[in-house]
Structures are given as structure tokens and as C-alpha cells.
Amino acid sequence: MEIMGLAIVIVLVILGMLFVVKFVMNREPPKFRAEFTQTQLASNMLNTFLKSNSKDCSDMSITELLQSCAQTEILCDNNQLSCAYVETAAGYVFSKTLKEWNLKYHFLVYIPNQNPIINLGTADLTTGCPGEKKSKIYPIPTTVNTLYTRLDICS
View 1 (cartoon, rainbow, N blue to C red):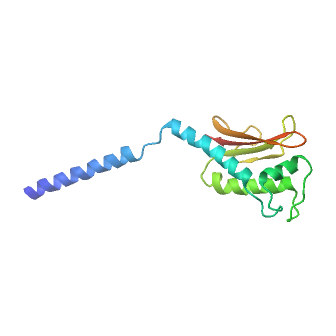
View 2: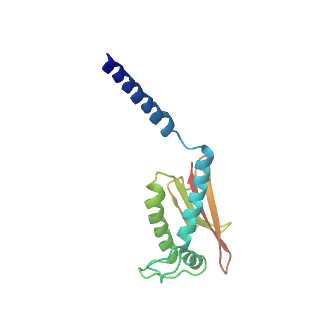
View 3: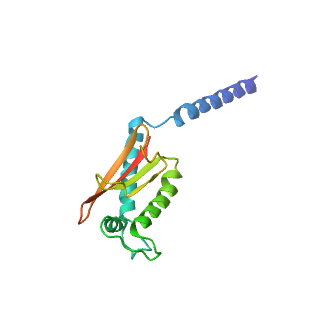
């Protein structure tokens, strides 16, 4: 009889631990934390991408390549123009990070009142992210005008 009572207690403890794991450990993070994380992710991804260097374009940074793209394009070592090189690099970097993490994104490089220079992502490229998004915009000054880069991460 004592062994049966001990077995019942052990079963009750195991059931209690299952409830703890199910309801406490698996709850979603608070919404404000997720929003802050997405905003920081957009900012950090764009900042890191713009400061990274190219290996095929005279070791220039992506920012310098975008400046040359807006002014007079240069030819990289792999026979690609600077705009095409940045677009290829952005597609590779964002597909290996944001796309792998199942996050929809929209990356845009543009001069105001002109057609976009680079427009890529997993979101709709004409309308951008449907619904809520977290964005970061970095202006890049050039001798001609200001170029803007924007990364939207869709919620």
C-alpha cells in the first residue's frame, strides 16, 4: 500500500512538471520585446551590410559602392558594375540570414522622386510589407544628391 501511494505521488509530480513545461516554458515573449527586437534587427542588419567590404571591388565598402552607383558606376574585378555587385551581395546576405530565419523583408536603395536603384526581398516588391513592418533608413550622401537605403522587416 505504501508503494502504491509513493507511485501516485510520483505520477502527480510528473504531471505537475508537464504543466510547468507546457505553460511556463513555451509562452511567447511579450509583444513590445518582439517589436523592439525586430526594429533592432533591421537597424543592425542594414548598418552591418553597409559597412562590410567587398572582395571583388577593390575592397571598397558597400556604402562606397552605392555612392559610385549613384554617381558614375565602376567596374568591379568580376566584370560587374557596382550597382549589380551590391544587388547580388544584398540578395546573398539577406537570403542567408533573414530568409533562413523565415522573416519577410524588403530592401530598397533609392533616390527620392526617381525609380529605385535596388529593389529586392521576399515581400511584395511593389507595395512592400503588408501590414506592420519595422524599418530602418540610412541616408548616404553623394556629390550629386542623397541616396537612401531602407530595410523593412515584415511582422
